[in-house]
Image (cartoon, rainbow, N blue to C red; front, top):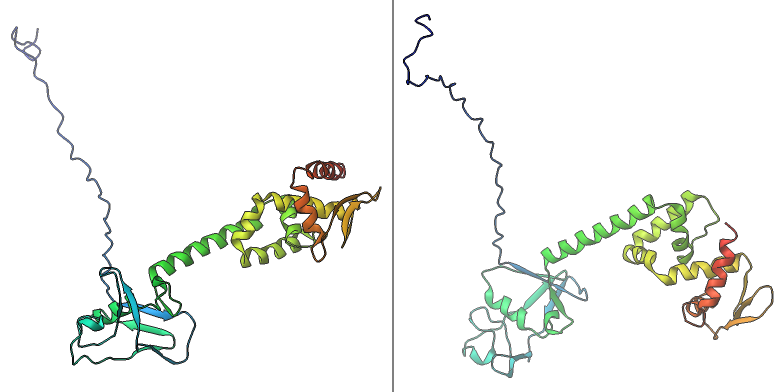
Length: 275
């Protein structure tokens, strides 16, 4: 046996470890933190828009103070820490609270004016109808929800098969005996004006029933007159119409009752034979 391959008995064989490879650096995600909004300024607006300058009445203005269970007079006096007249000094001087073009901006260094507006009986929060707080965050959320709702309504007009749109089109008084593009265009106008009502109409039994009634009239299964709705072939009265009411509306409501369920089923069966 050669010298290079011989080893002493009982001595462990040496192993050569591979050099450690450096670990790949883990890329950390950048952390973005929102800065908390620090803004104590507030803004009010008139509910019924006034003129260029509108002065808020202060003479004899009283409101209920829950903490003292009393009706107390309030006044805005810039040199006084309190808005309650009975807590103000002898030298207290009122100052006008003026809305300009229907808006009143109160900076954070006027807490007494802010308190005056908060407890004023004309504040909408207190049941008044003169002015209200402008909540820009709430307004932005409301507008965002409105935009999302509008987008959902428009998507329905664009993506739903025309067959699924016809009943809603009839309900909204749209002529369905026209080109598909015209029906979608007219429905788009409805969706933009009343997005929530438009979306809800797809799950409304009244919408589907009114569509059935209208088609039954168009195909002369029923005869509709201002005084009543009857079967076209036999002339037998189905439901009478009170003076001044829309016959289609009356017939639709009748079909949604237990008594009219059989009539609705009959109409749906007749219409199904046409397809």
